[in-house]
Amino acid sequence: QKEVEQNSGPLSVPEGAIASLNCTYSDRGSQSFFWYRQYSGKSPELIMSIYSNGDKEDGRFTAQLNKASQYVSLLIRDSQPSDSATYLCAVKRTRGGYQKVTFGTGTKLQVIP
Amino acid sequence: NAGVMQNPRHLVRRRGQEARLRCSPMKGHSHVYWYRQLPEEGLKFMVYLQKENIIDESGMPKERFSAEFPKEGPSILRIQQVVRGDSAAYFCASSPGQTSNEKLFFGSGTQLSVL
Image 1 (cartoon, rainbow over the protein chains, first blue to last red):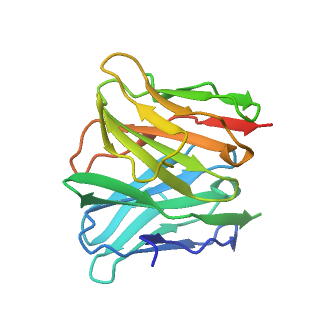
Image 2: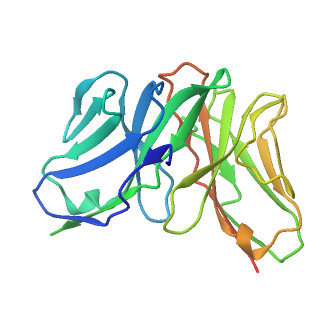
């Protein structure tokens, strides 16, 4: 079982729709969760972080965390073509006395005009 | 407001040569992570360093690869005797410390091409 799992996609949504990106993780001791956006040929850019169960909203983005189900998601409302990118889920947990960050393989999102 | 600085942006090497990739973390950050990314794939953890210490190198191949983060100067990822399979984007990220809420900030990456 991978430590952080994401559906590779591509996930195609029409412009203006809600895009829903999902991520599961294997270590119940994981403490912090991040979503990064990566445009083709560019470096990952942090867009959301979440640390406790529930929802966290920032503009058109909402991160949702359910530690019991070991599940974190990212919702993008009113999707725009400029949102087309790969979205990487990252999980931070304590391993060997220090914090380790592991990334999923990413979900490619395509927003169709 | 300098972010994480990586250089060079593009590096071309012939098989058997050495590649040196540099990373200067953000000001005030003492933790550096190196990741490798192949086309259409995710970020694969290689090594985590603090100043003068390698904390976790579990993702780095035992042969030909080494990393350092000296007291002064940038972190260096060194690949000796490169092979075509080393061609990838190498990203460096930094964070201020080790509390669980601290985020990673990425540099622009170095694209290594081995001919």
